[in-house]
Image: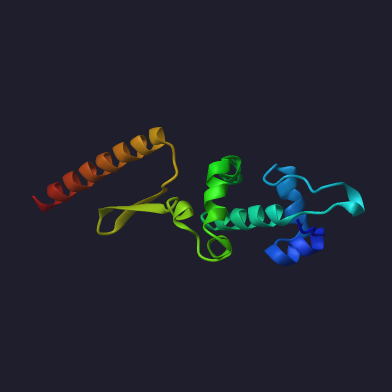
Length: 144
């Protein structure tokens, strides 16, 4: 397996050395092999950083990114999609975390992230129903 110094990882991923160290500190990526000047990273580090960059573009908080990276099946699926999907356009596995837009009226819209837990989604659905009821009641009262 090829060895990379932190400068090489930075060039390969477009992340600063500081960001790479931060990802190690937050346990998003494993620490480099060895320590100090002899430290080196490998291709797996680079792939993980590229996945992190894609997930960051999806506006996922670092805690959610950590959960996804801890899921070995998820990482293997993303890596199995090939280099193009990791470095280029986000694969379907990642785009499911999109923003959901719900129109309450022609001028009012609610947006929320799709990855939210079911309990919060249920509360959002209640808010949407309640809001639509209020808006339609007010609209019908104004017309009378």
